[in-house]
Length: 287
Ligand SMILES: Cc1ncc(COP(=O)(O)O)c(C=O)c1O
Image (cartoon, rainbow, N blue to C red; front, side, top):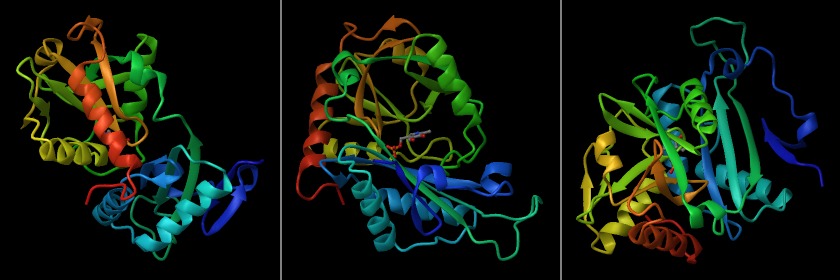
């Protein structure tokens, strides 16, 4: 079966999906994107992803080409056409095609592109073993709350991680961890509280982060929304990341130092389980 993608209103075999040379996404990185996890054929936390997309679009003044219902129908149709029941749906909107000029073009229609990536999320081997993380300087701009397609700093950060034998990079600013290259960053202190950086323009408001915090609150798990330093992270009892394509993933080393006993921690495992149960429940997605 040929891989089917969605481009500007049509479902096409990927070989036939062409974007203009003059697309502002290509020339300027002038666009935003979203990624939603799929488990058991269902889109997980999709309402929150669509809310964040709306916000990202509003912040850069691109009008949303579809209603939520339309987006959801297109996502579901794309997953169905690719026979994908577990994985990730990527969707992006750019400011469209126009002669190269920095200022917004008049009347350009946004370019909408969407594709699927099949992936094992629930039984990912990394969830059993845990992953390695390195820290790198956060080289990004000041509006990290917008899910921009301009990801050069993250490309460099994650390549540095790969070259160091790690799977994610935690970006650091003024000694404090901001977030992962493509994930939200958490530690658990020796006294058992979850520490996560509060929302601001310094980080992306992670959808998985939001759901996990809500689930934790419901279970009475202690949360401490504050910044944490790299040294605190080295000294933590446990560490983990969250993202739409991984849910909750344990971290067992940071910069080569073992976290806790160097194995996925018990509270991290419980949080992953809670998230999986939520994702698999009939009313997937917290309100
Ligand atoms: C920089 C950054 N932070 C956090 C996340 C996690 O967000 P979410 O849970 O919505 O996938 C992502 C996901 O791609 C990201 O790119």
